[in-house]
Image (cartoon, rainbow, N blue to C red; front, side, top):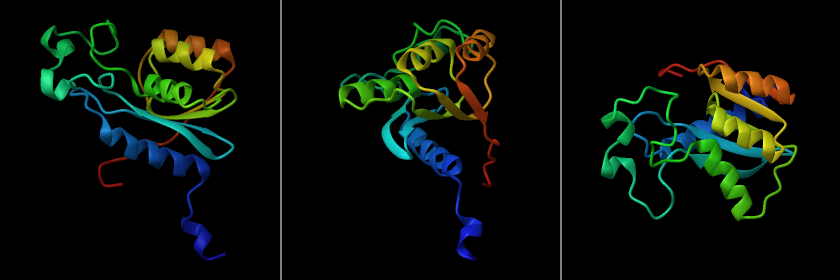
Length: 157
């Protein structure tokens, strides 16, 4: 069919939605979006930001920047949750079973999120942007979770 040429694959479709979700982020350092999908149905979404009801970093400032904490270190020194954490928590709050699901993330997961993904039963990760976390990579390899890297986009995409 003529119209199918521009129709995105499921992975492209869901990754574009994750890209939209990340625009809700309140993090001053990096915007990340995540969605959890099963049987081509969105179960939950998440972006990085402060817990519900608390002031966002855009209001309070960034603790990590103030302390010059390098990216990927000292995750506990942050007001916010990661997008993956928020998506997993949202699924739990609303009773969505995510065992066997796919998570679409705009950035490779840190080791903390990787451990949550493994224990949640998610079986596939589709991501857009690379992130150097050797322990996370090692644990994902050991877990047997399928990791698919999609092409990164440019601002003009």
